[in-house]
Amino acid sequence: DIVMTQSPDSLAVSLGERATINCKSSRTVLYSSNNKNYLAWYQQKPGQPPKVLISWASTRESGVPDRFSGSGSGTDFTLTISSLQAEDVAVYYCQQYYTSLITFGQGTRLEIK
Amino acid sequence: QVQLQQSGPGLVKPSQTLSLTCVISGDSVSSNSAAWNWIRQSPSRGLEWLGRTYYRSKWYNDYAEFVKSRITINPDTSKNQFSLQLNSVTPEDTAVYYCARGGLRGCSSGGCSIYWFDPWGQGTLVTVSS
Image 1 (cartoon, helix red, strand yellow):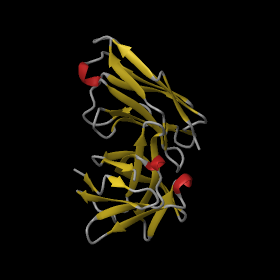
Image 2 (cartoon, rainbow over the protein chains, first blue to last red):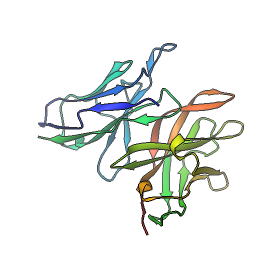
Image 3 (tube, rainbow over the protein chains, first blue to last red):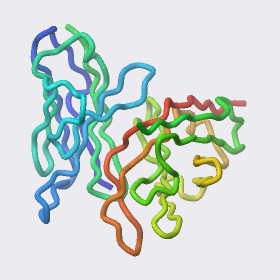
Image 4 (tube, rainbow over the protein chains, first blue to last red):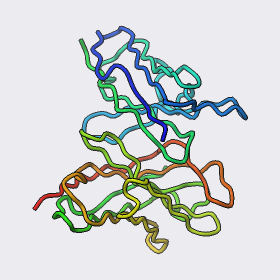
């Protein structure tokens, strides 16, 4: 199984400031044949299911604000919120779909400082 | 757009069977481009993919190794839904259970893998307790 490890476990950021969440996979999720990283990011607000924000490590899903961006390749990835808004308070998860056995990171709780 | 609506009991006794149903609207359980998944979430174990069913000329089922001996996921084409059965439950199976759609990829004669999950059902908190 590919183990996904996120850091930090929790994060407090002031409104309007940048938030950065990291995700590391135990082995590469980059397919050399198409040069794509098989990694997605989700946002989960209280009482709701996770919602996909980013696929292919850096492609924003339709309707996702452009303050959310994803970067990284291979085994190391980052989700960045460029200017934190109150509605961004949530738990964020990374997920690999490189292998048939899908695995998630443990989550990063983002709060307002 | 695709929507998933879950139903099922929120309380199951130890050693009994957990049963949940997910009704699909806006897509077909027999779609040849989607897999229908069950995922659970608990504070101690986080998000865990449990298994999926999908149709590619025939029906396929894939299950996570840690529940493989206890789980069954069945499609119901007449009602456009799919179900989860988890046998011999213990308190460790207490969790919020979600159904979710995953796009199929990498298909071969042996089956397919999937992409990310979108959309998800609303979630069902299942508590295993006597």
